[in-house]
Image (tube, rainbow, N blue to C red; front, side, top):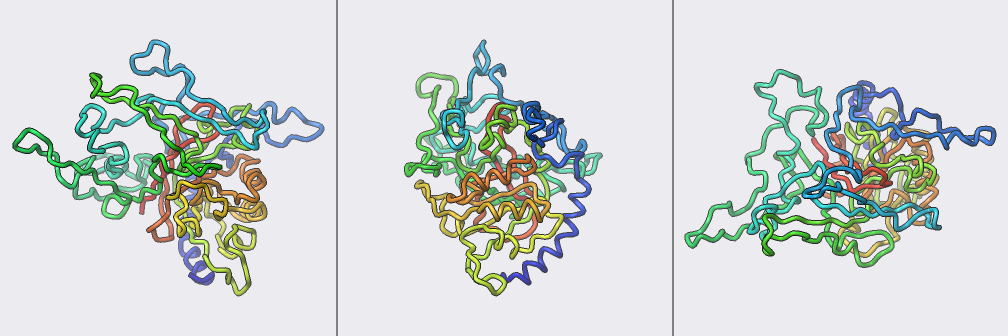
Length: 427
């Protein structure tokens, strides 16, 4: 699509985005709000020392309610009198010379606010693969408003802004074979249905599945084995109970400012302090042109520079943009080897977005928004003022560019500078 068509498309949708942005504006523009200013000068060295993150349960002027419990060492854990205990470690710390803070989490999968798959208590479903990845997102994210006495527009996290038609199936864990039993008392060969699109093409899962070959930074082996079965029905337990050990910046994930700014890490600007209003609302999925002939000039679109950003003609009022690049064409997120040649933002491209747009959410289709050669400078530009949230590793294949409603929900990990995140688009 040439730049003129892109501009025309954005102009058409701008009124929708601007109206929504105005209606949902909060009192602060900070994605990670603090009651204290962020301007520290030589005459006021303690300004950043006094930063205190605001932890909220309600966002967007009372429209969004967080009904998930935050993970902390004292939260209850199944059959434990001591609570969850320590669940976060910091194997890479800026205080020890690392360029960024990178935490690792170790969590029982049935801890805190969680969901059960049939394999939790049915071993034949566990063996057949009816895991959490097979659940139906239409069941989890669509409301039927028939016989209800309120307007759907008042609910943002259902997750749906407006009522959507129900799909033809009411099975939360659909199978191509049904779950009836054979004449010998054994299950028919159950095959779980894994999908990317739900509710007759209205809901798109833009989150990558976590598996041992999911790529991770600075590794050619992927994330490796991240699940273990601490309790198994085959060993006499009443249920299957898994344990998850995972770097918080694995797969589709979100960064907090403490990832690259140690004073923000110490102040507590973690994942639990991010603004859910920024992570949920109208978004623009844009294709970065793959060739180098943009607006008649020779522009290297293999890097997201200021020149490339300017050529996209992203209008004022657009607050959430998901960038689909050559990373998707090359299917880099499907390869376990980390590839340093991915498309990402150069410092000047990040600065251009900050200076010339109203964007508060930046999403991209590989493990980092920043180009490998400009890794820290680009992150610093985006995160230094705590006004922009970065979502990385998005799955953006086979979806038309345009305007959607995006919903991204991270785990409420107290103290973590990153978190795996589940993101969907609703048309």
